[in-house]
Length: 216
Image (cartoon, rainbow, N blue to C red; front, side, top):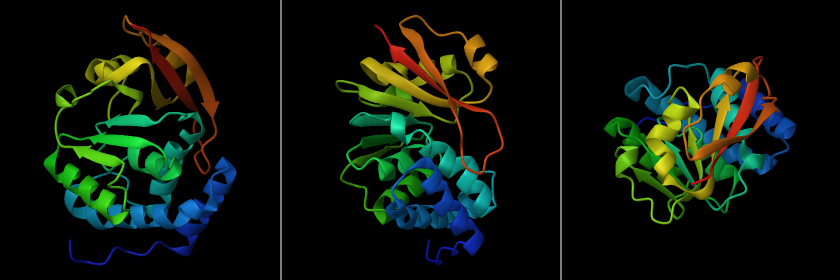
């Protein structure tokens, strides 16, 4: 796209800055995260990357919700299945400089945006875009972490992407109410390891991080 990205308002930048501070993340992340959100806004009108249009809502409901997971990503490799606009893979790649990330997206237009975001943010040395189904992704020895936001239940995420996890690898999934998470069935070969209550800055909603480990 040839148009210039829209600049974030002072209110949106303040929300981003305070959110990073509340999460205990490096204030230096604000500049690349700002570029990412502005690029997302530029492409969103044509490519429908997210139904949320307001910049401040994107920051709280998408960006900070993803970044709240960062302290739990103590790994060297992560695969983000159904990445869409890049959530949570791109924010986590920015927050975790040693993390190698694979963004998996079947929709060609969204994959095109992901490649542009990777190029703009200079992440090409450790972030790869796979424009294919998760079942087609070469796993190699497997990824240490699996994430996904475009699916419903934990079982559905694991059905599509569980094979990409290395033995002992973990699914990290941001979910809502604790009772709903605990009621979800876990497929054979996996176990629910933990479910942490999460406080996302600017988001007035119950959030939990479900951690499911691969046992077989």
